[in-house]
Image (cartoon, rainbow over the protein chains, first blue to last red):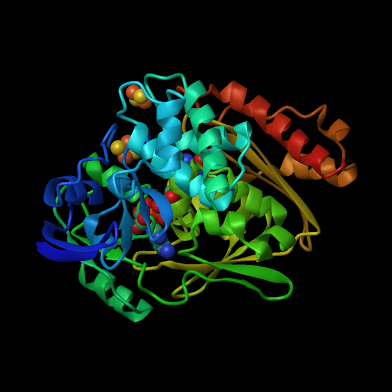
Length: 158
Length: 265
Ligand SMILES: Cc1cc2nc3c(=O)[nH]c(=O)nc-3n(C[C@H](O)[C@H](O)[C@H](O)COP(=O)(O)OP(=O)(O)OC[C@H]3O[C@@H](n4cnc5c(N)ncnc54)[C@H](O)[C@@H]3O)c2cc1C
Ligand code: FES
Ligand code: FES
């Protein structure tokens, strides 16, 4: 059974004809061509697929595309503005918060949700929040530093 | 994932109708358990009935001597609710200890207790706080609700609508989380309620249950010392790659002690 699913993606109206079993991440990557959102595990563990659904971070591999009907969806492609990296992205670059970069889109989308709720997170809060984001390369030290610095830069921007 | 028909009804009557017409239909709440199971092809529902468009399932309200939480309330919303934090802080903390932030943003109270995973957290709160489960058909007391491994008193076509948690005099939850998933290896809720002292254990057995030996000991003296002489029988406890049954038996006493000391005992 295919259905037409429509939602807002990074501020633009999008739609696609999908199977009811199509995952949201599949629709985003394959139907809509936005491949910044990654699939690391496909078993709800790794957080590489984290996006924002109506302003909250969720794992897009553990949602059906049909469940996003009418929603406001944001992915990593919408984070930079006018070719300029977002302060959180800049902080990951500056603090070497990535090596292969596979986990990075999910790390950044998850961190942005944290900062929205807690503009000045300490190291413990960052580590607890990133519980659902796995990184096979960095050992997390620099990711935590990057999130702290990114949050600080975002406060300064406000 | 096998194919299925997707429905998003807007009333409980419509849900009942779809469930009645399709033997192999299943309810979809947060999907954090059901979708992974379907991806592994361990479940093959003919129809999925998404509860997200039904009004009134996502409310948290203070009814005076209790708080009532709708089946579709997400774990993150229980954790962040002023009503829950004020009336039953142990419940807000429990919700905040589930999985990770993204699981808490999708997973629901109704889905968790309908599933009754032996390692899930909410069952300890439902049983420990002497809650009442409201369904589309009746009200079920917590003591009559958990029946066994992934088994509850819910009948076919019966769905959880809300859970009413009486406000306890005091309550604390202590959990030994699996370091990877955060599911409870063992979790213990200790609560002094209007119906008496209750100690509910999750993670250790096939489903959540009350540790009556510990309740009796704490009834005599509410202190960690009262737990010193108690050893739990490991015979019927879970034994898997996460922990042996002996280890779980030991953890029950340790977690109960932590909850009691949080409460000043
Ligand atoms: C990585 C990860 C970590 C997790 N860690 C924890 C943890 O630490 N502690 C913990 O407790 N849980 C944990 N969970 C499970 C999580 O809390 C789930 O959200 C929860 O168990 C199921 O809720 P759901 O809303 O996602 O339900 P769904 O997956 O949508 O449904 C689960 C089952 O319940 C049925 N159902 C759903 N709603 C109702 C209803 N209202 N009435 C009747 N039947 C219904 C469905 O048909 C299905 O059979 C984890 C999950 C993941 C993916
Ligand atoms: S791909 Fe979604 S959690 Fe790993
Ligand atoms: S940078 Fe390679 S997985 Fe995180």
